[in-house]
Length: 162
Image (cartoon, rainbow, N blue to C red; front, side):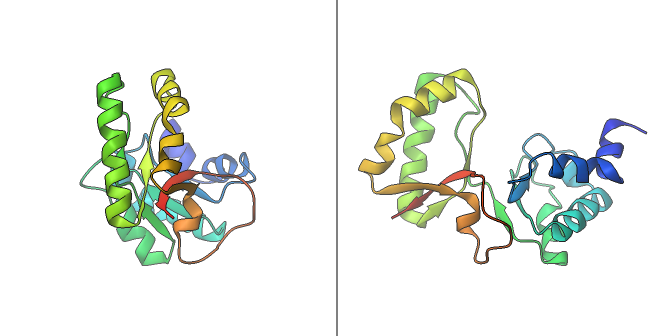
C-alpha cells in the first residue's frame, strides 16, 4: 500500500486531521491527482463530514471531483479563485496581488492561495497593509462559509471586501 493509499484509507487521514486540533477545514493544495479520483475524494469527504470540517479545493486541475463529492455529502466547500505565487518574481507577485485586490472589489470576497515561499512571505510582509488601504479585510476561510461547522481556533486567511 502506497503512502497516498494509507493516508486515504483508515487511520491516515484521521491522524492527519487530528494532528491539527484547531483545524476547521482541509485543502488539497498539492493533491491534483487525488482530487481527480472518485473513491478517494468520497472517502476524504466522508471523513471531513464526520469531523465537521469544510474543504478548500485548490482547483489545481480542471478534472477535480472535490466539488461533486462535497456536494454529494453536504460538506461545505470553497474554491480557490486566485493563486498568488505560481511565479515568485517580484513583478509576477505584484501583478497577482493587484488582480487579487481588483477581484476582491468586484466579487466582494475572494479565496486566494499562496505557498510559504520566502519570496511570497517577503512580498506579503511588505504589502499586506495595502489591503487595509483598499478596504479589504484578510479573514479566515471559514468566515466565507454560510454556516459555522467547527470549533473555534486556527486561521486560514482569505481576502474579503469590508
